[in-house]
Length: 434
Ligand code: AMP
Image (spheres, rainbow, N blue to C red):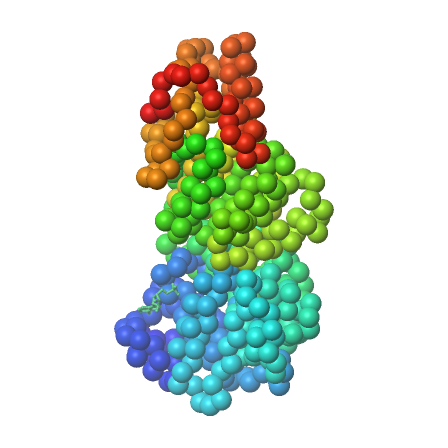
């Protein structure tokens, strides 16, 4: 469908023509006329579908037709990450380049950088504010802007907003918006939480169903990497850097280890925070907020604390210490793999925990190839091959032999010791780890 038949004004069609957009994409064709009419929209659209132009073009047109009051904010776009927020801002600016002067004022706000320049930029209001939720709330608390005159709000990548644990923040922001407003919700996937949000905030929306990401079981790539315990921090840092991971959930064995490992990771130059049950509510909220806003964030948790975390899923989970049980292993790796996307679950295996990991694998009928990373090859020796009984091993939920229990206790003790930064017990000479 040509852009000219969607009801867009010439300065906007000219801007898209200059970007060589020959025709509108399906999401643009479906939602642009509805947004121009002032309707709510509920669209399933992925990155690459042209969804940014689908909301930016009609928002710019409506703002041009109804200029905001001085000092007010006209439209608000909420995005899960600073990268996306910056990208959306660039698109608004590009699409609005031919609108009559004054050029629309687009302000981006996200965390991890100083507040002051953003407070300055918000002086006098803005036509469009593109924000990550945590930083927007910080700025609201400092009266840097008001949301009372907003006519349109966009929840972009709503599934990622919820995956990153922004549900509370979204609720608080939505309560500050005028009841009479236009709400546009875009999401690649529709897990129940996103559907509930859509049903809650949208009024008789136009629905667009684009090509959805496969809603089937997420694919989780499981990796087992052999490493000596004292080198795990450096290895984690290496993996984050070489793979470009931005959000990592790291599991350790004890509450003490969350603090200790987070500190070690910080000393290694990473933005890492401990998260455990004994943190005060304020401490938990602060740790989560900083984690969500960081450029590269590492959250170090125990199994127990992770159950209370409002972060639904993350792209990477690392078993820095192995879980005690096969059930916990499933729970941990289930924290990664958003619907339609591949998650990565990495387990660090040491000589001392090698046998324990075999038992977890056996329960899940898995056999992961053991990897070694160049420069981090283990030097510790593994215990002799664990004789695994055909009737099920020594992992929680199955009957354990006395030998299994002893082996499990030894592995746990070694893992806990290693988390305290001490060298693990050296086992008697046996088979080298594969
Ligand atoms: P988005 O899905 O908004 O992230 O957009 C993905 C890419 O598609 C961006 O690089 C846009 O510049 C580009 N794009 C958006 N709409 C169109 C269109 N109608 N024709 C060609 N490219 C487009």
